Image (cartoon, rainbow, N blue to C red; front, side, top):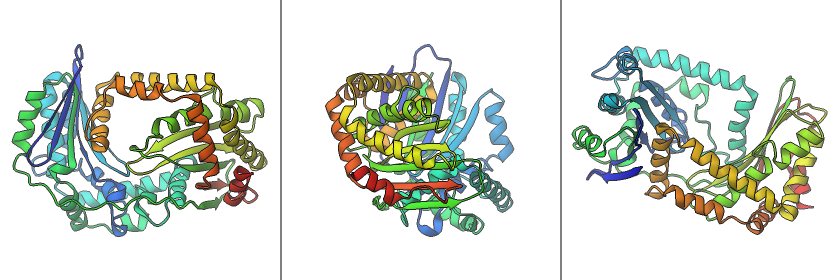
Length: 420
């Protein structure tokens, strides 16, 4: 498998990976314009734009976009995160050129028809309502807000309903004019692709597009607070976070292995101690997430109002204990889980294209899998214990609670328990 990268004079990066033996390919455009690139009055507009991409261009109606891809058995989709918006398609080898033409068209030439804006506004408002009705979904938005209050990194990607209800065509067009320059895009394709063919087509489509003036991104500043919402639900939804490393931090892989050992599977400490031994919950896990300049170690559980106190106590105990007696076997298992998860996850061209785009956005290059595996293997048990000690002692935490949480411990109590 060969990764090839070309950068056009206007800054557009084209990266491909040919995967021998595949009959299909994934092709997409990743735009460095997500939730954290919005001003307060724009909150939710990056996600609104993602929806509008499929609602027609100067050349294609919404139905034509769907039919052109699906007539050849393909699949098209998009997503918005805090740091990027992605538009991508999966098609057979013979249809890569058509898929790229469609993706480029919806990114570069959205029609923003006023009627379609109103239709999609209603869809997004329904999506916001659905999120609010899904406790184990909305709790993570609240945790993000509690960790980074009053700043772009803490705002919801969907945006508040009142803001979404107020967006107009000029707002959408203005965000595109600010943020959708070729130098803010990565064109990634993987599978049954030919780099030179993709490059020629990209040059024909993008060569006359001028780069945009870069806008500074507000750095993420962890502040840590508590968000508590009382509601008559069957369960308490508990989400606790500690500040973790960003992508460029040397602790990145140590934090990921620590989180995996702590709560990354059925053999993890939290699962065994809190679910299997004590039966205090059905679901509990820990994970490490990262952004360019910050990160978050998150623990989530759903439990009863009667058991939330005991669950919190045991969680804090396990956080402290990891610094004292994390074993070689636990760390080795976590390393194996990470490597296997990475390699299994990259068996599809869509995952390969995603990996290339994300690495280019963060590092300006695509590290080889051998390099990543070596970094994972370099994480030792003493490194994990040391990281666990620093994390538990940092006091940099945040908490979100949803449901019958009147008697649930607060953030101050959890911090005090960790500090003992």
